[in-house]
Length: 198
Image 1 (cartoon, rainbow, N blue to C red):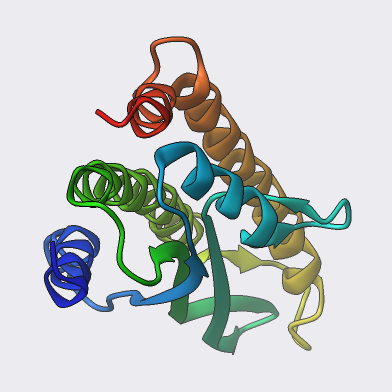
Image 2: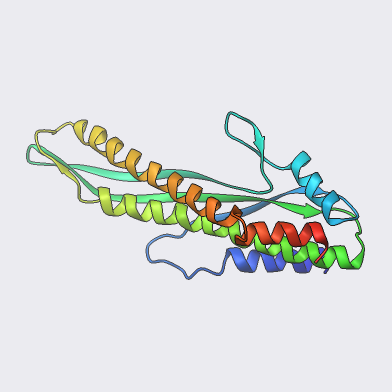
């Protein structure tokens, strides 16, 4: 399959979710090059060149990261502070492998199936992030803190709520990965098929 066609398929998977009212996340795809003439060689190349995650700098086959900023409108109402509105700007970046150079037709076919499945896997991580942002909206818009005319206490209250939602998002992503990488899990099956040239 040509690279342009594969890129189109990846974007189609990533952008297939329906538009939501109010705002939509910006989704970007970044790639890193992998090479090899067999499934095992391509798998090893991902291990050598994949994105590094966290302080441990462990390499992954793919990675979903995000940047979230907010435009918030705090208003004093009497002696209270109320978060009247909050509009997020969410940028989700998917880092995915892309085969460089020609490969045998059977290997290319196997790779295309693997790459599409990996992109779909990362899209679920993106959906989990979007879900977190929508839960932040629900938990904070309209929040009122009495005795806070300077709108300072409300920020402390929000930090506590956001920490809980952020931890829940991380746990949901970990749980999803555990299922996907478990024996006979979807991603585990994709890896085995790539290694075996299926």
